[in-house]
Image (cartoon, rainbow, N blue to C red; front, side, top):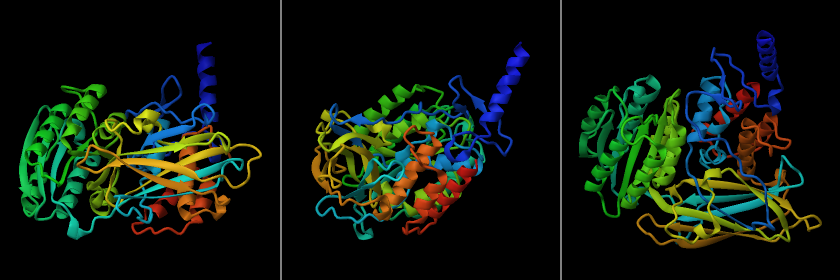
Length: 493
């Protein structure tokens, strides 16, 4: 009987992997990878991810106000790309965070902030995957800092050199990236290097940015071996950053690791508590995740979220250039604790759904609570959020204006500043919407297809390509063109 059961199970798995890839989340392996699934049927990689969740539709009559923190991370996109382009498989659902896929890309939002360090924009259009609903796009643009106004920086590299970092796609990749970073340092910038394995140590005391060879020679000395005392490294890095703190300057720790903490404080909640304690020092944090097989994505994303920071995943040399060269200005925070709040009128909106930002949802009262942490935005950076709304039946095609409230703090302030955006319904179809709407909606649909969302509607990979191809956005470094290749390959997988 057992053999019959095993045969039936095998036939079921084969059949499941043979379905139409256009609207299915089946996995196909062309590089010899062996699939492992947990008891819930979730694909297992050895990496650690949060349990997959998705924002549901909320009835406006029950909860008319939606509040969330912005998220400037891009790690989920790099990790997704690695699965599809290098591993020849679709990523597990827990690896997909829609907001990080959207915010990976540089969009040329106009900066119209005036006296504020952030500019706002938005629009409303038809919904391409559900014709009965509409989409609201909310855009934020960080102020660009001219080179003449650059403030001096106090950086601390915090580098995991434990045994798990020994592969080419981990420590060696990071070493190359840090060298790119050093090339961008100015005469008033300083950098220190802290390493951690079984214990933490200072490899390089805080050194002037003019001493590039000295800094690069220290980076070349890095080698992997031993266990991972992550908490000790974090504490030492903050101590060094505090000792060299620059008033009115840019003070930041850059952590490079696979997140495999296994010595000292290794519990994620305790690590987050440590980071929350340290963020009061007004030192910002950038987290760089690397590798596969033991990547603790869940912990790294939360450490960045709770540490006034951002999280990126490094999967290839071009991503190094993006983080350390093309997006260098993002290391300069221009606004922190940025929150968004939308009040929906039950008379015109029956229900709404925030697409992505699942672990960034805030309570209504958190919006004006200046002790409540939220996300940061770097110089020149853009943030986008989409809502799918269900209009009330028999309402006119043109909806009233939507008022979106924001609050932010200046980097060295503890008091938030309010700002508003009005979004008007001009009865635009999706095809009449801006390229920004088409591109970000296309990414959202792609994310829903990867995660087999119950809200994906009529979306397909072919349609995503059609929507993306209809745009004409600047693509200086080819990342938008690369996205089309990713969608095409995902369709085949």
